[in-house]
Length: 81
Image 1 (cartoon, rainbow, N blue to C red):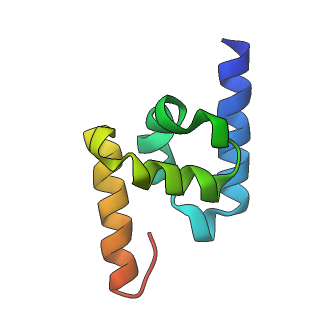
Image 2 (cartoon, rainbow, N blue to C red):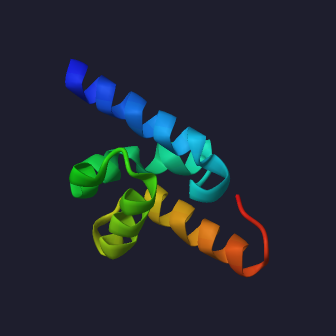
């Protein structure tokens, strides 16, 4: 349990430091469980986790998929979430 909390903290810190480029708190919250399920080996590298999540899109939770799709749509419109 302590390891999970420490890893979550590292993921949040890494993502927070790179928040402007790597998603909002809402996106991280929706995808944290999926990140550990599919991409744990990439934590705390936010860019690698993001790529891994996209590569495993079909298996992601509904909430995480929605956040990833929303971020992609926002990027196409020229702004980030």
